[in-house]
Image (cartoon, rainbow over all chains, first blue to last red; front, side, top):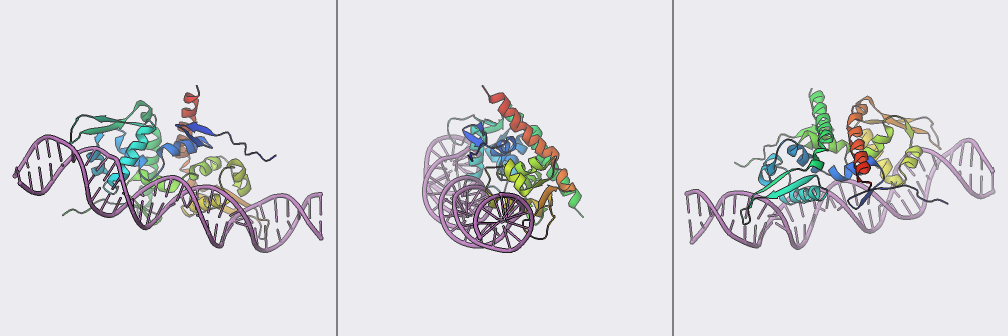
Amino acid sequence: MKEKETKMLTFKGKEYPCCASLTMGVIGGKWKTVILFHLTDKTLRYSELRKEMPTVTERTLSLQLKNLEEDGVIKRKVYTSKPPLKVEYSLTNFGKTLIPVVRAIADWGHEVIENNEV
Amino acid sequence: MKEKETKMLTFKGKEYPCCASLTMGVIGGKWKTVILFHLTDKTLRYSELRKEMPTVTERTLSLQLKNLEEDGVIKRKVYTSKPPLKVEYSLTNFGKTLIPVVRAIADWGHEVIENNEV
DNA sequence: GCAATAACGGTCAAAAAGGATAGTATAAAT
DNA sequence: ATTTATACTATCCTTTTTGACCGTTATTGC
């Protein structure tokens, strides 16, 4: 009688109740949009990303990069076979479809700061 | 010598390293964008929101509503003084500036679903 | 010969987020 | 008189996320 009739949306093996939460599943969390924001217009090495985001720890950064890679929004390209490695991160074509989303998010934050500076 | 010179952005007492993370601080988490998504075009009572989001628990829903209210993006209007209460939630003017962001987020999720249905 | 560098991964721990369940006050409906 | 409904809050607990810190491999620079 009281079935929970919520037709879930599925993406990459995860289920979401709504299209907005699906997106948040991909770009949510404390750091993913920041990473995507820095990668919108350029390719960056791991160490360059760290310089752009000095407050994130290495472990968290690499975890988030791995997540984003698994969801197919960024790609990882290795240039050397032996240490010290050279690795570059960039958006995939699929990841590029997120650019308007990331821009909207960054713009809003930017405007809030502009209008709150008294 | 090795100062962490990251000029943080501040909003509502919280600090963020970048404009994108500020926005995520406001709309991030599993449920906030879903709530905002349902409130974009209409005012809803607590019980109506629950019907739109059957998979969220009551506790979480009211916590998220409170968070959103504290950040000034939604407003809570009480119509009765004694139980059973009538309470309506809607976007504030400030919250309405988030509509393009929420729409971009929802649209992306929607498109992903469209193009993944095989 | 030693330190620095690159891009991590592993372990442990803390913090944040979310879920399960039950309880509250009161009025209207049955 | 009992049930139903509303909009929550209170506990308690589990899961997820994030952080701190150290180790690894080989190469280059001093």
